[in-house]
Each structure stands twice: as C-alpha cells, then as structure tokens.
Image (cartoon, rainbow, N blue to C red; front, side):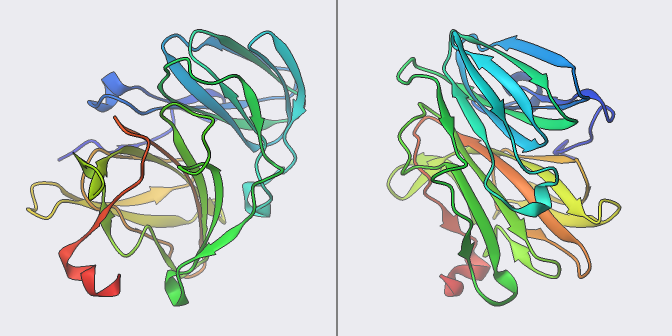
Length: 264
C-alpha cells in the first residue's frame, strides 16, 4: 500500500514536513506551521524557492533582508478571501512572528535564482469558478503558469462546495512530454468545514498499479506522485485544499483518464 496520506504531527508548531526525500520524489516540498500569538519561526531556503501562504491568521514577516510588515487577513480559510503570500528565492532566509494564532504553509521547489522576493496577493487574486453542476469549485490562483515570478512552483487554493467533486474529471500530469503532458509532483493540504468532517481522494494509474482511495480529515496532506487524483466532498462538508506542484518544466499540461475523456 502506497504511503500517500500524511497526518499532522500534532496541533502546534511544525505539524507537517514533506521533503522530496521523504516523499520519494524530486521537486515538491511542503511544510505547515500552526503558531500561537507571539511565537516566531525562521528558516533558510537553501537551494529551494518558497512561497509562504498565510492560510489563516496574521503574522509579521521579514525575508530577503526586508521587513514585509504584517501579512494575513482571514481568520478562517473558509472566508474564501484572497490569501496573503510571500515569495522568497533560494539562498535566502525568512522569519515569521505570529501576531494572532495563525496557520502558515511553506511551499517549496528547486530555485534557480531567477526572481526577487515579492508579495503575492491579496491584490490580483480573484476567486474564480471552475467546472459546472456538482463539479463546480472555486479557485484562488496564487502562482500558476501565467504568473512569471517563480522558477519552479505552481501554487493554488481550491474551495469545493459540500456534495461536489473537485480535481475532476480525473486527470494526470506524470510524464515529461510537453506540450502533450508535463511531469508535476503535487501535494494537497486539506481542510474541512465543519472540521470534524471528511472528504475522499483517490489516486490511481491507468494500469492499476497504484490505486488508493483515502478518507481525508481536516489538516491531512495527500501526496500525488503520479496518476489521476480526484476529490469528493460529501454532502454537509465543505472542502478546501492548497495545491503545490513542481517538476522539470513550469507548465501545467494534463491527460484525462480514459473513462472521462468524453467530458473534455
């Protein structure tokens, strides 16, 4: 059985740490901090670029030799307001001090020194609809392909209404064959509303060698090394997830599963 479902270590401090080494892949890293007011954390970026995403709460941030002030606005991710984020390049450092209780995601991928530190959002991030019917969901694009301020990272937030499907129709991006398809590793950081709810995520390949269906709870992370990866939000439970993708080429090209090709 593949070890794709990652449970948080606890409910305080660093509660997730997924590295390329621990995930068994090459590009994507994801960490998550839950801090109390007044607590601080700092890291060096090394050979990786990062995007700090203020998932919930507020914090002051210094990075790349600059004081960026207080970032953050929403106290619950399900307010669906645009996130406050900060891009920090490789070979640099950052420090965060919580001014309220806060949840901070650290999204990382190989950096090539091609970009300067910069704020991302909330200006310029607009909640947009994708899909229709019970496949409708809502997207906050943080750093997707049309934004050119990253070397490797692709990052987005998705809000899936209760009773709806997401990352559907099923698709994969696990081959390096641009422009037909690109190789992108991916993590899903899940939140549920109410928090005692659950969602479903399946990760499967066409040949069936990988086929895992997981019940995800509030705070879980799912790693997607290859294959299709649809999510379902049962009636009564709203689903949020933060996606981090990266690969050898910063392009998002995918191939649908054979059983859903007629939907594209």
